[in-house]
Length: 101
Image (cartoon, one colour):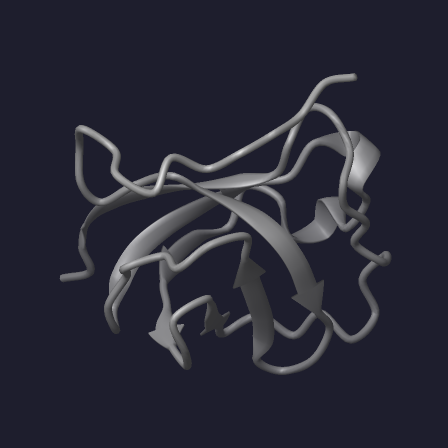
């Protein structure tokens, strides 16, 4: 059996985090598998494998609004998007970049 995990103490920062769930809406709410450590207006890129669904939000690149230790929102209207499903391999994740300017 293959297992996926997030390293809670990565050697680089900000850390890439696994996406546990995505809730449709405007804005769209994203939940990570463990505490993300992100901050408001941090710029992220979402990578959603085809097997996870919700390809419409895949490759999102932009700022976030942190709403909790494992949640944040993005200004995307996902009300008509396909459903997101997890777990699947490869795993969905976010890559964090520099601050939004």
